[in-house]
Length: 618
Ligand code: OXD
Ligand code: MN
Image (cartoon, rainbow, N blue to C red; front, side, top):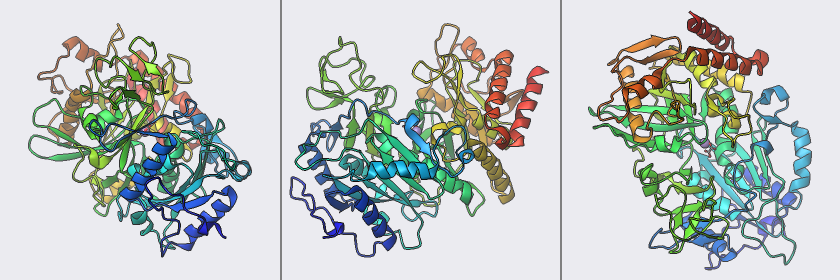
């Protein structure tokens, strides 16, 4: 019996999974699946078709194994809670590798191991690793089915949780497989939880392995992931494909794969603008993607919350798609007062991971409501009360939900041509020095702002508190190649955009997180950020002048709409205060950071630093 004739696992409700490749499946896929199966030796193979029936059967299977808890259908229809192993709760950057042939091609932001050495390691780890389990085959499309900007992949996994999550996060199954022909390029993504089962061995709710490897082979466009079932470690379409591997494809093919949200803003006259924004993790990206403006007449709608693929369209415009189909959002801090749109999005059809369970079968996390419930079961399955002295939900607990569930989803979010970008913004988390908003002087200056995105290190980050953590283009953990080559690529895209004759997007830097001397935030953020968007779009429309400063263009006095805003004039002044000493020290820090990339740093960016220092000094 070949593996492809293996017995099918049967779900508790009697659903029969598909165990044969659909007619017309390219031989390249069948051969690869058989090859991986021969190494990993699963008990069965399932070809995911992406149907609702299949999702329901997987959920049923996981409920019966204790992996999932079905939430109260009256409170949270079609929704589930999953608790991970406490040692498997986040992306593990220290175990993430870019295995390019040359170390320099991975660059200083990445862990590097030679591909041959990594393949030796993986050969050992993957040998028989799926014994006792089912291997699921997940063909998927990143980007709307049929968009010229979309790309394809096939993930193999022994985790039904990953299959269910991939159905929410990507367009997967039959409709994706139909698009892959013998000549369509597709990315290989192999994943295992690293927990084989001996005959008769009882499974556990969240199988994983202490040892983890999240590995990428940029030259052969492959991803191999071992030992984790959580988030970006395991949903390989997201950070591993749509950013790390796609950044390499984009570099080679002349487009951009970016860690950016996408929104459409409509002004009171009905004019639409599209904006792409890069923010490091934990800088309020989901909130901006689902922003509800406080200024009258404005509307903001969601195109994407995490990743954007951008290319120059036939019309010479920079156009962007959201390659994902769902949101994998951080739950804590999401509440009716901070992000009502997200709260509405997750009212049903959501998988929650590592949040707390209420006594009536619903979910809760810190920030969901002002007052915590009197009793909960925490993310580790233990009794919890407000006096417990520990969070009820894990700080990185998540909701996984389809973007189509989002009440603010934009009508053009699946436009196969992509949306035409008017503005690009770069944000970090800076308590000092960086003003609320600055417009770049030109494209090269904008690329400099992108390459130098920074946040003060917090106690949670692996750096000395008070020092700057550089996160160029918010891509530091997600580059598939040398970051300095990415900056060069951005400069090149700028030249091509100018040559194409379309409108070139304006570039802005924002900082919602500046604090006063007492450590209090100067800017209220959330819906009030719409005032900053309004200023950007009035700049684009040529409706408002700006003030030249050594670091770029800022609003003239009264240029930012403050009607109805509860911020003192002193706080406003402080939000835009030019701290020359701090800015000079930032420039020194940026120069030192660039030195780490040596010769690969584009000369234009060195020139930007020199010119900035000169302007600041004079
Ligand atoms: C994310 C991240 O989870 O950027 O999106 O870490
Ligand atoms: Mn992200």
